[in-house]
Length: 366
Ligand code: NAD
Ligand code: IPM
Ligand code: MN
Image (cartoon, rainbow, N blue to C red; front, side, top):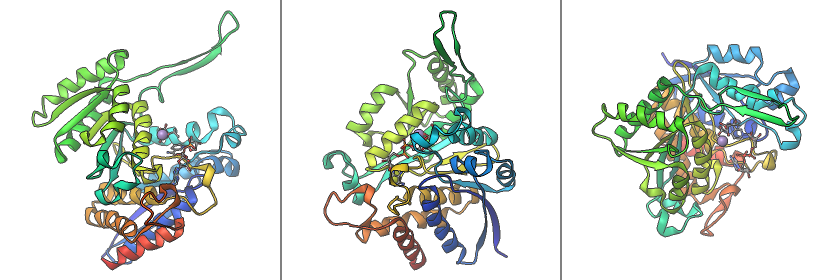
């Protein structure tokens, strides 16, 4: 008897639905092998959901997510102008995405920054810097820090507008993400870069204290300390010195987008958001309003998020590997999407939907 998994499908905004279609093709291709079935439950979520249902994270969607085995989410968010049509607290980032993360306590965000050697020419870095490819894993704490701390906005006694946003962490929140990072380092090259700002922030001082305690259980892992601003430069000058990097929420938000820049496009950035009981999967990037509706978005990030879901939520590591292989095969055949450009003059641009079709053909040929 084949296994059945239910997946809450949150297509999101702008390019979200376009790249979700391609993820569905891949799921159906996996299904066609007869070992597993996927019950896909499409539910409104994001800016469009706010306009259609009056809420960016409708109650019905919460129910579908609660019942699902995993959640696959497209990017949400609107153009700057369209966002202004929604009250600040209900804009989809604050009104849907952060509440989704909070609801399922998805504290461990895996953001792989990966470009195999044969695709290294897509990186804007010099060939000599990326020779051999890029392969690092950013582990970002996802439910603490500045994004989730208490906020206050007001007017002070002098009539001046002010804001307070608190950067909050407790030691348990820090410990659990560090354990995830040490475990990942143990599976990979046994080197962990700890990215912090303990020269200024006392949150980083506590983070580093807890790290020293956790490290006692991981004597086989070499810990390397790097301050976040220096890490940004080091990532550009020599990304190949890194393997696993761990950091708090906002540092991870910023450096993971830098990671997309190292690869040549955010379209190559999938992610896994692992929770205590439920996990969800989404591209690291946004809804790309600038290219929505043109059929040119790169679906790699969304299809890669499917691969991460199969591996991490459903124990389907082999199928996940085949999805990565299938995507490499499409590039290997000389095809790419427009965002990556054609740095070596050997590629033909294909649409979002052609890319998905070619991934499926490759997958079915294995
Ligand atoms: P963005 O990531 O949407 O786009 C940045 C650039 O990368 C754009 O030029 C875009 O065209 C390009 N890009 C991104 N994904 C691509 C893909 N798959 N294929 C080809 N090109 C791609 O960042 P932004 O413009 O700052 O944000 C747009 C909206 O997305 C905002 O509302 C923001 O809050 C939201 N956002 C949502 C998420 C999420 O849902 N997890 C993440 C980041 C940003
Ligand atoms: C991301 C995004 C989100 C974040 C926003 C849209 C809330 O930038 O997933 O990286 O800042 O975490
Ligand atoms: Mn981001």
